[in-house]
Amino acid sequence: MGPDDRWERAYDHFGLPLPTARVRLLRGARPEHLPYFNAGLVAMPEAPGDDGKRFADHWLDTALAFDHRCAIANKRPWLDQITLPLTLARFGYTAHVLDESWNHSLSHRGTAIDATPDVHVLHYHRCMFLEAAPQWPGILQRFFDLVPKTDHASARAGLRDLGLTL
Image (cartoon, rainbow, N blue to C red; front, side):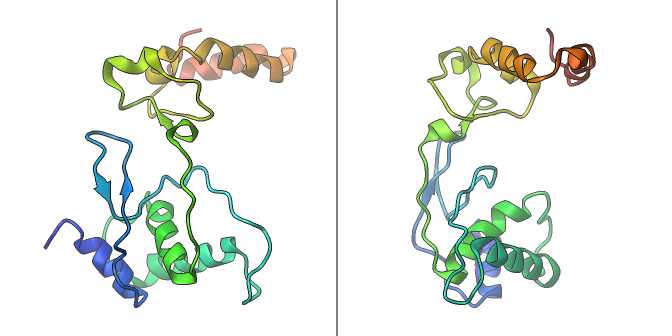
């Protein structure tokens, strides 16, 4: 079994060839990989296609079919990320990949965390990474600007429960 064996079986499940296109991953050595996307930020037109279905309908159909009928283990919690490129291939969608400022991973920066650029979305896996980012004071201030003052105490308690220091 090769490193792409699961992807080969996933594409084969839908009668699709393995794509020749590659994307550059943002973590580690930033290797090129079969199309694989963090599905946390996806924008698609709402208008239905020629078949009367929207992208969301196609993605849900693909995810359900893959989840229930494709014999590949350990699909969760990555079902959305696995089925996004499958949906693109099944229904002829093309992806416009945004630059890293739209998914800036703080968790995999090592000591360079204090050198984060002006980004749109900070992606982190543990609160300690978020607190170390230079954007954190502004994020925290904006959060409390949006939370009614009567809820500040419970918001602070909730943030502390998440492991944040305030």
